Length: 293
Image (cartoon, rainbow, N blue to C red; front, side, top):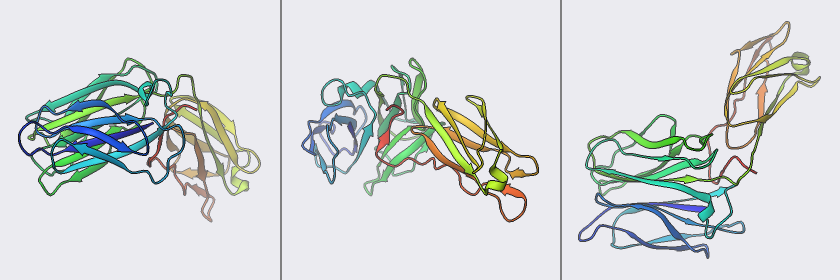
């Protein structure tokens, strides 16, 4: 599924809207539009049955104004419905003449993911996103506007949860904000955290413990390899121990989403004290993959 997040300025007359989208040979359908304040913030969807490469997507606006479009592709979504309809759950809008931008929805499926797009008509000023959220894209326009896309940092584990997309600053500008829930394919998925303690002298037979969201203990093999499987989304701590060796720091934080994490390496310096020289990469780059096969 593809989603296009569009935010625009306003010039005069009736407020700005996105009239249509075209590109990649797909049919684009409006998901949610918020244009109570000047400008508009809209999300459009389409569904591709095969891999796209070098595709261009164009938005046609109701008036000639500055704007921003961010197109994302999502794998592992619910493929039912037409033009990606099965992959979109709840939607919501928020707007205000002032105050921190905010919109909330209740999730409709376990492990869904919430994204949002907004426009600030008054100032070109960077967003300070709320807790547990990540700024995906931000454009500080020369016209004095801000257009941005943000998301929850990870999928929401349970259906029926209240999820908010919000910014704590600025709080004095007019804004429109549209958000939507992206649904994974039905089913249950689990993930794996694995890695290697090297060299083998320190890793062989080491005890590696998993804690926080779930607890487990494994013993590294003779090459220092270890693996935890069957894990749900969540935050974990990986803690190694081995007689005669010390680890600095004593544990490694790991967040499981939206794919299995491997490797998590623990490597010693020349002394007998181990140091972790590689950490799990948490930054997401497009395309996004929901935590389902």
